[in-house]
Amino acid sequence: MKGSVFMAKLCYEDQAKAITSIIDEEVAYLKSLPKEEAEVEANKSLLKVGIIDEEGNYTAPYIALGKRYV
Image (cartoon, rainbow, N blue to C red; front, side, top):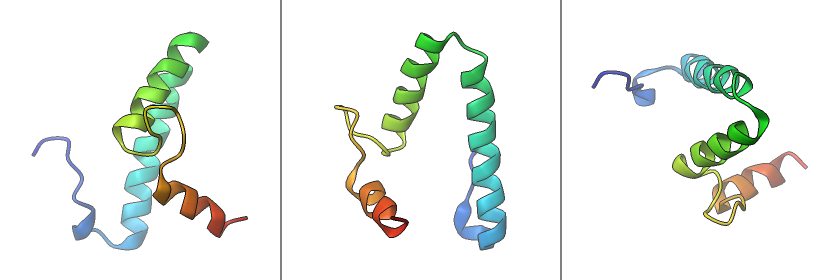
């Protein structure tokens, strides 16, 4: 699959590097947009990957992850 990243085949360090690279590209893209458009696009991306729900709230796995660091 072109453009796919198979995390199961990567060591933890390589997984972190791959994820960081994807996030860095997304941040650079969002910074290139006008603020209002960037907010809309950011929410679309977060919803697509399951970090937020349709109301804009964090989903359960990310709530639990956040509690780990409080």
